[in-house]
Amino acid sequence: MRGIIMDFGIASVAGITALCYLAAMAVKATSVDNKWLPVICGVIGAALGVVGMYTMPDYPATDIINAAAVGAVSGLAATGINQMYKQLKEISKSRQRRLSREFIKKEEDICAGNDTKLYA
Image (cartoon, rainbow, N blue to C red; front, side):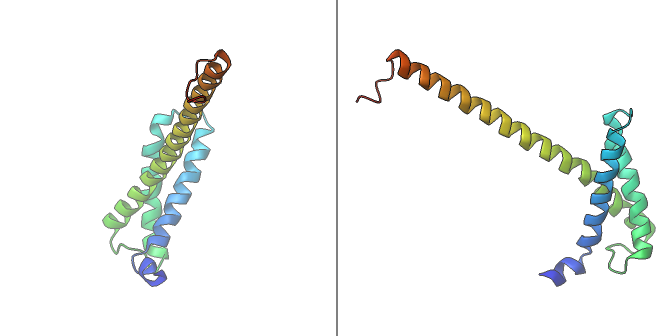
């Protein structure tokens, strides 16, 4: 399996994604509007893709255009990873709030004697 991953250059692409993610976190700490983060990550990724083509022997592109495209997609993946994390976190919070409301309602029903399921 390791040979297949290295044959496609996925390790180098993952490195670009990680570096773009770190760059996005640094930009978020500034006053730059968040709407520009995908553009910034795409441009940084494209630049890193071209650098990667010249410096990494297993890079999955052999010309500048494809190297920039692979890098840009890898950079944009960094914003997708961040959004996925945020949405999963929000789903978890939402589920926790819903379960908490259900538990409180059940406790109120038990205290009020309205829960017949316990006695059936």
